[in-house]
Each structure stands twice: as structure tokens, then as C-alpha cells.
Amino acid sequence: MCITSEASVVERLKGKVLAGELIGRQEALELAEAPLFELLAAADEIREKFCANGFDICTIVNGKCGRCSEDCKYCSQSAHYHTACTETYSLLSKEELVAGARHNKEQGVLRYSIVTSGRALSDKEVDQVCDSIRVIKEQVGIEVCVSFGLLGEEQFKKIHAAGAARVHCNLESSARFFPSVCTTHTYEEKIATLKAAQRAGMSICSGGILGLGETMADRIDMVLTARELGVKSIPVNVLNPISGTPYADNKVLTNEEVARCVALFRFIIPDASIRLAGGRGLLGDKGRLCFTSGANAAISGDMLTTSGINMQTDMELLAELGFEAKLCND
Image (tube, rainbow, N blue to C red):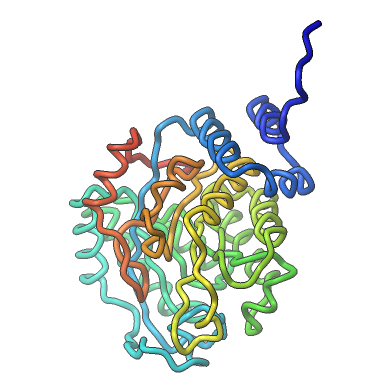
């Protein structure tokens, strides 16, 4: 008599995802308790099925720095906290932004993201940066992503017409936990920003930060919200506890904790670019485990106010792991 054992939750849900079905919240919560390395291997299978060996690598530039009006509890640029980040400057000039884009293109970067501090750029600043984007597209030819705060549809239409293709606005965490992260703007305002960008014809990039004090359910809910919005680029930041901020004493997550989250996110949005972002340098392996557990994108180079991992190191790692740098989910 042949006795067969029941398939594990990982095998069962992997089969469901590979068959083109979506998993739900309760199923994701079950996966969160599954044996780690079985989960990671299954997530990498899903990544290979839906994304092959493409790896979307981008860089960011701090286009406007410091004295931000918002009270996000993780951020060194918030005017509400006293941190070592004392540098402030207004929007970078066209010459500076174009030079940065050119340098990154020469390093093999395919997507260049301009990020600015503050609740939102003014209409005057939007016009100024649109001029820079037009020149970047004409003279450099790199893809441009923007993170300009809580803008509206008409502003995004101008930015899109100038040549930017993608808007970044992180959800940060779940709707339940977000009021513990920031009180000067709401989760609903973030969602409205992402929807406005979509109506303007742009793709959207939105993820969050791990290690703020949120639960695994909060992380899952954040990515389920991103899925509902049609997000296909999910930045996964690891909190870098910064002295002077309310999260200064938070414990840094381990490689394994972050890899488990990456794998869960891959199960939830099988065809997304799961992008390791800020805090990757805090991981002992610089993200290697995550890149074999479902992640297939990264921000390379320095972050806004903290050091990152240089392009050459990242390109060598990608080649070693069998990835090919390419634009994904445009």
C-alpha cells in the first residue's frame, strides 16, 4: 500500500501561485510560519517562473535635502528631530541632475530616481525639475523615476510629459500601523498620490520599511494594499536606526528575517520587482540571501543620507548569481 504525505503549506501555495492564482491574507500568514529555507527556495522558483533572470537596478539622488515638514519617525531629514543630518539645500540645478544621470548611466544604471525632501514640491519646483528631466532624457537617455511627495494628477501629467515614467511613494507599512510612523500626512493621502500618478499615465513604485515595530501581519497587509493598487515595483527597506529619531533604539533585522519577508512578498505579487533598498548595507551578506529568495531588484549606490553599496560590487554579485541587469515592469 502506497501512503503519500500531505503537501506542506509551502508546496501547496507555491503550486497555487505557479498556476496563476493569487494567495490571500490568511494564506500569507500561514506562509509566515513555514520552515524558512523551504519558503525561500519556493519563492525563488516563483521569481524564476514569472521574472526569469531579469534584475532591475536603479540609483537615487537626493534632489532636495533636509528640513522636511513631515514627522516620519525613521527619517534623519525631518525638521522634528535633531540628527547628524544637518545639510540642507534647495532643488538641485539642471546641470547637477544631468551630470548625476550621466555618471550613473556610465556605471550601467538603467533607472535614475530623483528624490526630494518635503511634503510636496511646489508648482514652481515641478516646472524647474521638469526642465531637468527633459534634458536628461534628451542627452543621457536613462529612465527617470521621481519621488516628489504628495502631488496631484495635473503635476504628474507635467512630469510624465517631461519624460519621467515612474512615480515612487512608499506606503511604509500597513494602514493600521502607519499612524505610529507619521502623523503629518495620512495613508489615504499616499494612496491618492499613487492613484493620481496612475491616472497621469505613469507606473508606480511603492513598498515600505521593515523594523519600525510593525507585525508580520502589517507587512503582509502593506503588500496586499500594493497589489490592490497595481504596484509592480516593491522597495523593501530595512530600518537603519538613526540617532535622534524616535526609532533610534530599534533592533536591526537579521538577514533571515528580511529574506522571509522578501519571500512572502514574492508569493503575494509573483511578477513584481521586489527591490532591496535602504538599509541593505546593514545585512551581513549585503542582500545575497534575499537575491536567492525572490528579490530581483535593488537600489545601488548611496541612499539619501546613508551609505549604500557601490555599483561595481552589485554588478559582480548579479553576474555571480546569474542575473541580467534590465528594466522590469515598466
